[in-house]
Amino acid sequence: MYWLEVSVVTDGEGAEAVAEVLRPFAYGDGVVLEQYGDPNDPDPDALETAVTVKIYIPEDQDTPALRRRLEEILYHMGRLYPLPPPTFRELRDEDWANAWKAHYHPFRVGKRLWIQPSWQEVETADATRQPDDVVLTLDPGMAFGTGLHPTTQMCLQALEELVKPGMRVLDVGTGSGILAIAAAKLGAERLLAVDTDELAVKTAVANATQNHVQEAIEIRQGTLDTISEKEWDIVVVNILAPVIIHLLEQDNLMGYVSGKGYLVLSGIIEEQGESVKTAVTTAGGQIIKTLTIKDWVSYIAAPTTKK
Image 1 (cartoon, rainbow, N blue to C red):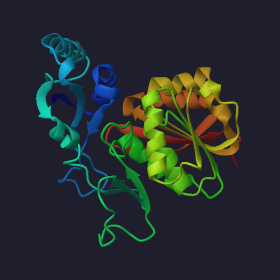
Image 2 (tube, rainbow, N blue to C red):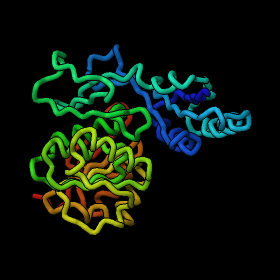
Image 3 (cartoon, helix red, strand yellow):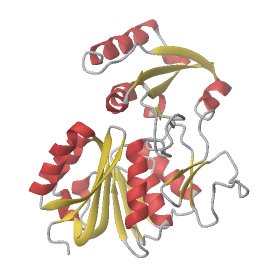
Image 4 (spheres, rainbow, N blue to C red):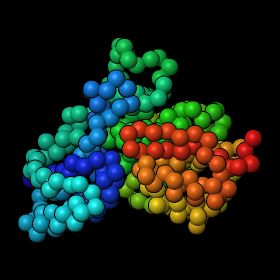
């Protein structure tokens, strides 16, 4: 048996859109986004412009008609984003299982967060890792939100700055669970993580268990309007700008933040930033900090009544 790897190279703006149109064709709804560090830029957070979006399809679903369908979809998307044709590659079982591991290595986010692949031992002798680092162990192969993407990295940086022991944290659209796991390891006491995708919920539960924080985080399938609890110290939303705006305008997202709390928003392309800021202000919030990596932007917001 082989697996068909379908890959498309785009930029940060196009990556999320490409991922969403390819996801329905992917095995287990799994989409891999690869974006590597820029070796020519001294900034440790600098990333190459190119993002490679990959999905995997089992042999029994690989047909000429499917390949043509994917080419057609991406051709039409290419009229909005600059996209090359997709690349098709057949991988044996063992190659598929390791295809996404080759370039995934431990790396740091912020000052103390250390992202560790689950199949590698934590290297205590690694000079770049410090004894007080908060280690997040993840299997990024088919998960949503591995720490590699700028939107996730900025959320992790914000959580590292904001989370204090005993805080209550709500993670909306948890994906792999990486943000809730980080908040738990940073000392948050009450954590709720929700996602509409059943596979994402299962992935988040598995990752929480692997990081020994499963007892600290309630993970469930659902939407924001199914959550009755309010007054969260931190609410983090790493989705897409249009969804964030809808949550602010239609689902009272700001109302879930306590008077002294924070709202972390990510998944926003730079040119969408003003629309998100307007929605925050209209909802009774204020932007207190902006984080930027390449053409992605994240906001830390708070209620206007915050002192």
